[in-house]
Image (cartoon, rainbow, N blue to C red; front, side):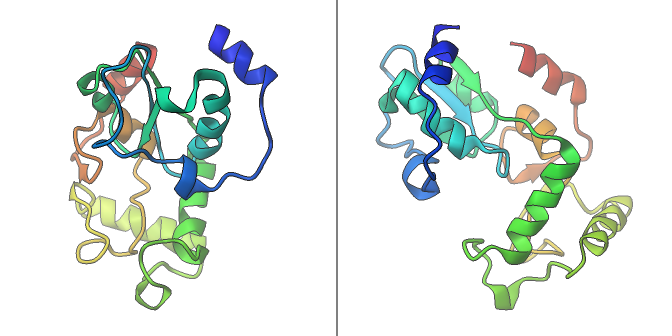
Length: 182
């Protein structure tokens, strides 16, 4: 509660440089200190902005942010796990725009296979899912039809996974909700 009060009082609306604030290096972060907060970064949910604002309330060295699974918080003995969630439909749309138009997406524009229309992207994934092709290891370069995020409930996936690039055949929504309530 005190952290949230400090956060609201000190919220800044400066632009966030994601490469400076978003992700931390597991090798150099001090996990032995008390009060470490693990910020589970789910892409395209405003976690970078949240971390930027949290740093003023909790201190920059107390928040470890990484695109990883909920279980990482237990492995690093974090005192709390935070994340940002988003309406699933707008989340998928944002993923699509990131992959199709962003200059900082890791797949070069010349190699991207994202359809020009969002409807084609969603329908393409639906067909891929119906064919049983969405489980397994995600590799943007070889086994992903659209060189993009898999829009198969990334939020549920991150709350239940042990590896962000491994997608199970079925998502365990009950486990995800239970983890959110912890």
